[in-house]
Image 1 (cartoon, rainbow, N blue to C red):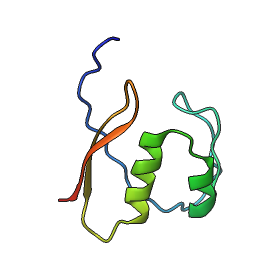
Image 2: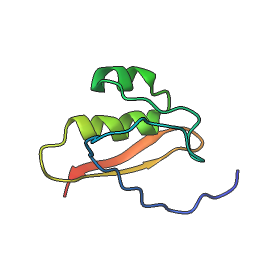
Image 3: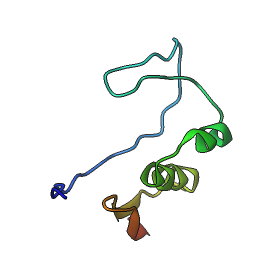
Length: 80
């Protein structure tokens, strides 16, 4: 297994103003869906955890520390 460097990932809460979602270099599909539907569409444990943090957002950022290889493991979750 190759060592994966540490990454910092930031997720932002946004509201659509107009337009149609479309694919990019980072995704093959884009769509507006409800929060509940989005959670059902996610398959990666790390992304599920990040989306759950979004659902739990109360105005304070949530810090997540996790590893994804060889399997997903949440090391730390806390408000900052």
